Image (cartoon, rainbow, N blue to C red; front, side, top):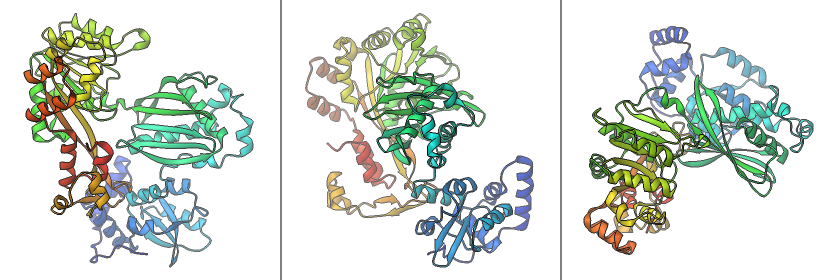
Length: 561
């Protein structure tokens, strides 16, 4: 087992600890959190100084990952709740904790051990990463695996009643609520409940990537979980043959959060996806939002701003779900919002409140669709309009007419790249000449995960990876490739945060003529290159060459032609 091996760290100043203790008492925060914040030290330096202060050996995540947890003595649920763990090592039984100030915790740990443990200290984030390595850091279903089998069988899926699901003592309620709560804590955008013959799998989408969180054996458990979510979303729990959509709302840390539910039948039961619609952005107006922090390169930023500042016409933003389209449109709209124009948006849902902007939420149940709302907007004397998404020919036609009659229209559409957008609109049956006359330009974008700055390290990609990425060995030899090795800061993934890359197709007269003439895409691409368009793949490769992301990530998100 390895431990941190550096020069002897300095102990934490007694005065600093005393001041932190007083601040923690008045603010209600944990002493450990206040002390780390006020110390001004990096996480590694802080935990080493803390270990020196208490004379505890310090362990990093790599040391922890090499050890075996003793969940038979201290269950995972207890370990995660207390943020400590018992592990087996050559020296014997080790008790690893993050907060040495918690003497009650130490006494409790000693009471759970048959032999006195040896104390070790680790950073709280490294302990969380240790749990993630074992695929149990977010083990919301741990309690579920311990439910008495007779209790599960007592409430069969066929005879499931509203009272049995919604009873306060039901472990199913605790299970679903804790799963949603943990997803909010880690910043997941979606929760996937996938049912198989063996039972239930729970996955979170974090930074655009699905991660398996846990599994629970037993189809009966899976059916009850699905039924509980249906009850929350006010869906028909008896209907299992057709897809259903609904919503529910919970309070998280004092704020109301909306959740969109999609239920889909499968061969054995049903799958559920919960989209987290975090409305906390609505509590405060978004002030000072700009395009700069989104990460686009200078040339792309210049082109987006140039298109957004046109007095009329249409600016389309395209990309898959979760690629940041709405944020880009918000940022562009915020930059041109000088108070002299009437700006109206229609969205589903409204994600952030923009100061000085009239924002209308789509409500299809009440008949307020994008198309109907857009017609009403045009009678409200707007100068600039944001349409959250074009989903149907009717909305497309009205948006085009709006752009042709002196309005600036910002909108999005789902497509793989800027060239697929052209075919998407033309297949909606819109008039080609009107479409190209209204269109100023198209922005295609993706979000790439960035290498974690805490665990970034050099590495050499193999020949297969370079070949798939279409990068020659000669070019690779001059590049310093980087990747993340995994740490507590990034929960062991090697990635932390995301960065936008984009391509901009500006509609020139030559481009309009080619589209009206239904020229092949290959010819349109050549004209775009001639006009200075830089494709998504090139922007993604440049980000990897700069050492900010990996070849694996750019190959996951973008396509090598």
